[in-house]
Amino acid sequence: MNFLRLLSSEVVQHITIHCLNTSVWREGSSEQPSDKAVRFRAWNGQMFEAGGQLRPEVAADDCKIQDGRWHRTLFSFRTQDPQQLPIVNIYNLPPSEPGKQYHLEVGPVCFL
Image 1 (cartoon, rainbow, N blue to C red):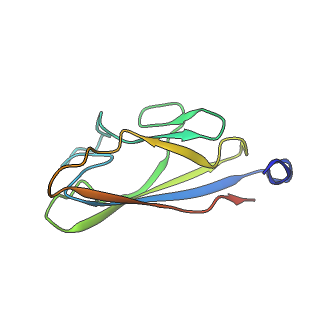
Image 2 (cartoon, rainbow, N blue to C red; image 1 turned 120 degrees about the vertical axis):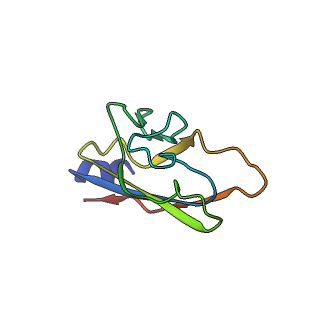
C-alpha cells in the first residue's frame, strides 16, 4: 500500500448501499442529507460525512424511496491525498428492523 501511495496523485473508491425501505443519506423529498446519514472513516482517520469538510459525492440516492422494492445509494470518493483511501469503516448504518434491510457493495481502491 505504501508503494502505491508514493506513486499516486489521485485515489478513487466507490461504495454502493443497496436498501429496502430504509434511508441512508436523505429522507423523503428532502434535498439535505439527514442527521441519520451514514459516515465513512478514511484510512488516515478522517471522516467523510454530510456537511463535513470531506464529503462523498452522491451519484444517486434512491434509498430515500421506501416503496417495498430494493433501491441503492451510490457514493464516490475521489481525493488527491492517497492517505485517505480506502474507506475502513462505515458509521450510522440503519438499525435492523423487520421489513427494512440493506447490504453493502464496497468497490476496489484505484490509485491513479
